[in-house]
Image (cartoon, rainbow, N blue to C red; front, top):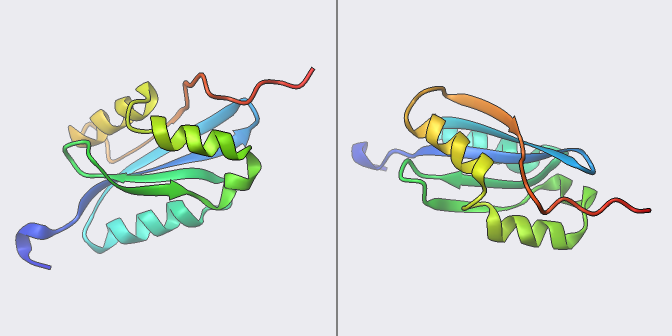
Length: 118
């Protein structure tokens, strides 16, 4: 990989906390550390969905994590569709892209949480 092709990614993991609360954890990483961060997000036991974005906000890659079995399959599909436009995700990406911070976690604000059983 050439000098100007080094990875500079923002890696996010949507982590299951409880049925009605997920956390979005993000970090800005470069080079080989980007692969390590991606693999860590993928392999975390409670990661519902992970994604890697470039510094322009474009999705590089993403998919269900090991914790996807904590939620119904429809939730993972919806997360896949909405990850690029979710307000919490966009706020975290902005903070990482502008180097305000290199790590950040926030509760996911989302209308897609499973409905509570009566």
